[in-house]
Image (tube, rainbow, N blue to C red; front, side, top):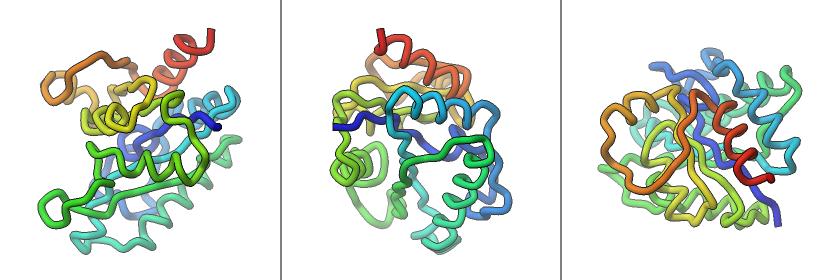
Length: 184
């Protein structure tokens, strides 16, 4: 079975902005492409897992989200790498109860089933404690929080997640830490 890095999108791979559904405004966070390339060169899949409530709020469409993913793939391709797949939850927590919106593990479990991933040998990386909680609930081997995006604020608040987790400056830092810890 495959092992993977499940990676949140906004604030981890690409910069946070007020227009997260506009593909032309998608910008990679420095080091994100190198991190994904490193993860893939270590034999792991790189799977994007993201909450996108803008769809249910009718701010954007499913097609807009797929255009953002295509733009990410173009930017990553220019850097010599790619994501293996993209899964997103279109729901808002107040309208549609679901099991796919993080902190629930539905997206990770669906990706694992679809792509033949051993979740117990995989990692979840995000910039919010809900990302880490989804990884824990899914049974990921380890979870990590980046300081980019909302990560620094999540750490400052220090609420919402119990248990051990890795902290890194950005996706590249976290991927290096996880590979060093588990690839010995």
